[in-house]
Amino acid sequence: MQRDLSVLWHPCTQMKDHETLPLVPIRRGEGVWLEDFDGNRYLDAISSWWVNLFGHANPRINAALKAQLDELEHVILAGFSHQPVVELSERLVKLTPPGLQHCFYADNGSSAVEVALKMSFHYWRNLGQTRKTRFITLSNSYHGETLATLAVGDVALYKSTYEPLLMKAITVPSPDCYQREPGESCREVAERMFVHMEQALAQHADEVCAVIVEPLIQCAGSMRMYDPHYLTLLREACDRHGVHLIADEIAVGFGRTGTLFACEQAGISPDFMCLSKGLTGGYLPLSVVLTHHRIYQAFYDDYQKLTAFLHSHSYTGNPLACRAALATLDIFEQDHVIEANRALAQVMSEATAPLKDHPHVAEVRQHGMTLAVEMVKDKANRTPYPWQARRGLKVYQHALSRGALLRPLGNVCYLMPPYVITPEQIHFLAEVMREGIDLAVAD
Ligand SMILES: *Cc1c(COP(=O)(O)O)cnc(C)c1O
Image 1 (cartoon, helix red, strand yellow):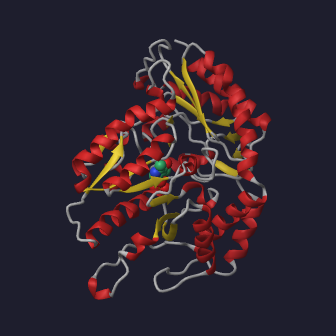
Image 2 (image 1 turned 90 degrees about the horizontal axis):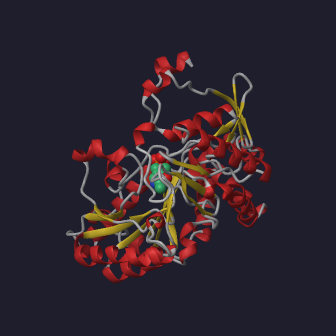
């Protein structure tokens, strides 16, 4: 720990916190468990920041990687190709919603969003539509930490400091179902809130390249959820107004909402789909943007026309990462994971149901394998706790003492576990969460 703190600067961390909050150095992982140097084990309820799908040191993914390591660790993807990236692209084209047909790789989620933004802008430019320079985003959305992705995001904690550096997005109020009126359904909220999107599109379509959304769950935005109907309406409106739809499925893809991709629940195909996080089963950094043939075709011309998409990252389409992704897709297929997850999601729902009556819980919400519990100061009118009190941190600390890794977002505790978790382990997490919340709200 001491050596770490003298040379490292950790992500998303006020380093001064570590004067009182010990770091947790991890020696090994196995399945849902992480083990520290004293032999303490922690149940990884958040899949190590939403990336791990089938447990740590998964024997099948390990074997695939070991085999790949003896063949090819990396090669430039411009002018050259390799088997894992071709196989992965073929399989992603088959698995993703209809029409998505070309795969452009990058090496992390933010870079994939940047690729989608640039491609959309560049598509319109190649068509001579140079007025289209802006993007529409939803309030409370999150698309990464690089400057362009912060610009199309709306989480003030990460964004506001950098505001002077950012392009100006058009922000439309989110269809977040937590904001519903008494008696209103999530579908009704979606319809009511879509009016704002329709207005923004009608007003700005001629200067807008694309609308970017996180389908169904705004994960970094406190796991706020909305109805699939919003996406169906959005797809139709984007087509009508001549604007692209970018689906950022970096967090929700690969089964987190119950279906392999969240867009499936709305029966839509976006113009661009961004994938990362679970893509490699949580093993290695890799991301991809899928798009359809019409977009690809707008870049396809003689070199001298300068219409090509001249974007690259050094580790684009890394063979080891692609091999991990292929092993991950094999597991989905061989183990019928999406079907099996329905039972696990049901257990998550039942195990946390008693929390709905907790005097300081405003809502327990769920889309498939993602479940969130919103702590509030006053349940009747949903008054939030002031952020300064950091009540979520108390849940985190309690969970560590009980052998679980729960890492609340502000006052929202959530479960986003690896799919190899057992019903008993889900009940254990629900118990730890309940104890943590009791402690966090006690004063
Ligand atoms: C995590 C995340 C990103 C950014 O991915 P990184 O790999 O962390 O850059 C983008 N969009 C969403 C929805 C995410 O959850």
